Amino acid sequence: MPTQLAKAFPRKSFFVQMFTKDISLEDCILDLLDNSIDGLIGSSEIRLADISRSIFNGHDKPDTRWTPLVSVDYSSELFSIQDNCGGIDLNYALNEAFNFGHSLSYHPLGYLGAYGVGLKRAIFKIGRHFNIVSRTLSNGFACDLDVTEWVARDETLRDWQIPLRDIEKASGSRSAGTKITVTGLHQEVKMRLQDKTFPIHLTRAIERTYAFFLKRYVRVQVNGTELHPYVIPVGRPQGGQVSYEKIDRDRVTVRIVATVAHGDERGRLSMDAAGWYIVCNGRVVLAADKTHTTGWGTESLPQFVPKYRAFVGFVFFESQDPLRLPWTTTKRDLNKESSIYLHVRDRMALAARPVITFCNRKYGPDADEEPIEREISRQVRAASLGDLTGNRTTTFTAQPIAHKPRTTTTVKFEADHTELERIRKHLRSPRMGAGAIGRHAFEYFMAQEGLK
Image 1 (cartoon, rainbow, N blue to C red):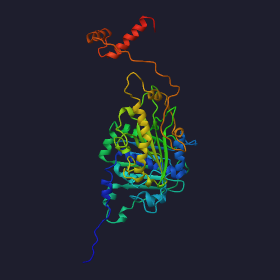
Image 2 (image 1 turned 90 degrees about the horizontal axis):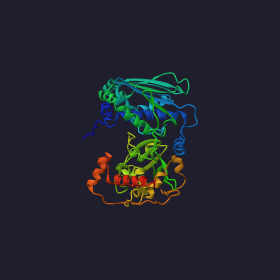
Image 3 (image 1 turned 60 degrees about the horizontal axis):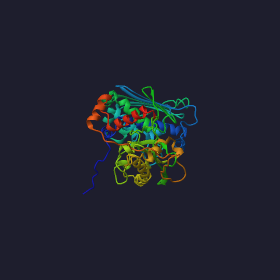
Image 4 (image 1 turned 180 degrees about the horizontal axis):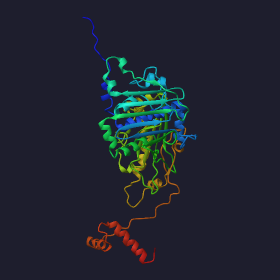
């Protein structure tokens, strides 16, 4: 019998309906920001080495008098993102930008766009109609598409093509850029945008994700409000060194750093900031992660508990080919089966263990003695990653500086419960503990006898 051919064509409705269900609105907006930053990289010839140097040398901003701006604006009826980051080249738009995935001959123009799905997925997720206007120093194009009408035409592969029209090029580098406007917002998107917590979640996501880009290479505004990079409390043990290792594998450079955080002005450590930070080509994929993904609660590391809030670790993955990096299509999680990540995860545990041991020792069992690690923690100072890393592998160590031995001891005595209650009543402190009462009595005696 003759061989028959079954249809295995892509269908627009699948990509528009199903392709958008596994990504949040915040992640869609981050994808659009990635496009802006990649436009900047492509137009201004920022190299991966420049980004890495900026991170590890602690530069607040490259040596330039002007920083491009990305403006995100939204209401219940409209979403727009506009930048002056160099624009999208017309030839790239015609041959790659609107494909679902990249062609085999594609060579990445930037460092954040990897899979060729972000732009389409984002605008399809947000609304039913979009308009794009983009200008580079060489050319320009405009696109206006009703998604509902486009989806309805799906007979041949020619129906997948999207019409673009030529427009004039940018008049100068500061006007080269892209504006995307989406209208006909989907009902669920309208509801999210009207949620009072949405601006908080979006701002937090942008400031953390682009902590190493904001104010260095690009500015971002959301509804007119300027965002600032999230400050990770990187600390330096004054009498020691951090865990650090550099690995080159499969055309990916990896830098692993594990250290202790520095406290705020009152010496307090933030649980929210503790954990692992996974960074791919400068983009923070996971921030302050305390889950199984980075080894916590596995055979490699203990479950994360509050006494580990001093721990801060980083893994920087860098590659000229973003497809080699261990991120998922949303770029907000890791591909846990990635060979490079499986190799690095064991090295992460080795780097973290000395810091974990240090944190454990801060809470010793002897109540009469304050562990020396607490004194070391008080001596931790803020540092840049460049201060902590070098050309050799190191293991975390920490020693006190000019440590003075403790001269205190614990004073204990028995007291009748009824007498303690009388003291609480007299001091008008019904919840005052026995230890606090003892301390009060000791200080009262010292004052009364003129010893203080």
